[in-house]
Length: 167
Length: 104
Image (tube, rainbow over all chains, first blue to last red; front, side, top):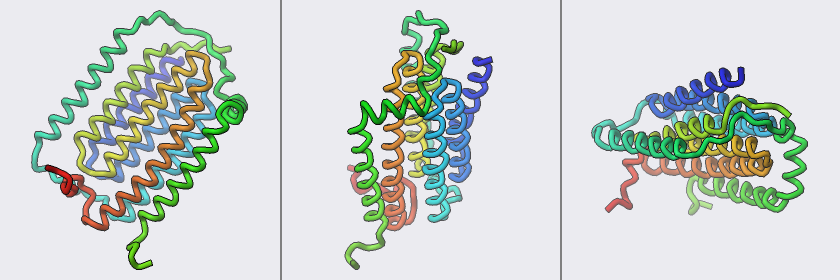
């Protein structure tokens, strides 16, 4: 049962990821990226990581992809603008990506796969457990990440200004 | 306690494929928005792998780390899209071939 769900989710995520990079219209790419992210959220459910499931949906589907769609609509980019003159760089890129995949799969295959299906702690990824760890062991990085968000916000506002010399 | 029937190798293969698709997207596409999406795809492949290892090794620190990666990815994409809007204002396109001032 678990493996069947894993297989279906994997096929959805890989197919949608391929559709992201091969669809001509950027809006379709964003929609397929949403599908990919939801299938990855399904993988988190399968791994009992409920906190990350919620955070993943909120952050990616709720914030990042809305930002992508917003920029595409704002700049009116929903048409094909690719300069498809030279095919050589595209073929070279595809071959390089495929070679990387072969290297990664070869490294995976070289592992000793001693571990069979094993018992895991089902309560580990819960909001309660992760919240305790986050505010106990990782309190300083958590606070530092708020500074990161502040600087990112200021940077985005500064970059988005029309012309700095006018102010 | 619960027994998972998927081994960590399944997740390794899936994350490798997703990561390679992301790399391929960065190399093949010329549209900056699609390149950003491919970067997100790669980050998600790594996140999935971190969660899988964290679950199979019974160590919750990996999941906290994924949380921080998500925070950094959100900040990164905010600044990146602001830069993209600036590029579009200055060059009139989002094609990275129009950014060749630093090319030799």
